Length: 128
Image (cartoon, helix red, strand yellow):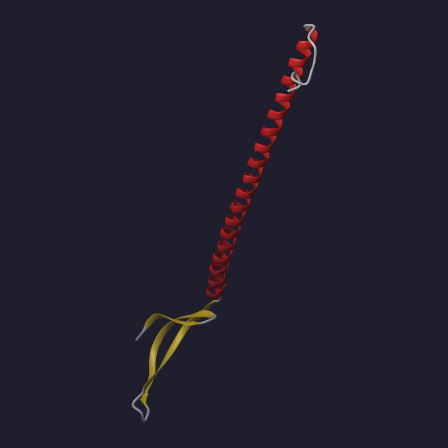
């Protein structure tokens, strides 16, 4: 085994990548349990440690929580907006009734004024 190699190890809080060039094999031994161990001469070794994995996961979780909260707020705001619209419609209906009553009163007053200006008299029947 010679040439450039890369070994990547993942841990819960980080990923460690070792890059190196194997120059030559130095030794090889086997222990009493049958495990073989090889020793190599290496150079040009460098290690890169990436600790962004947990941060990225935290970002994903935070984004999901924020989206859920925004959706919940949007639903509540929509429901509240519906309540406000209903109240405004009720107020508009009540205003329509009041305006109609005022219009009716103005018409009655106009009729009375017309009767008076034509020389007529006012009695309880005219006042309606």
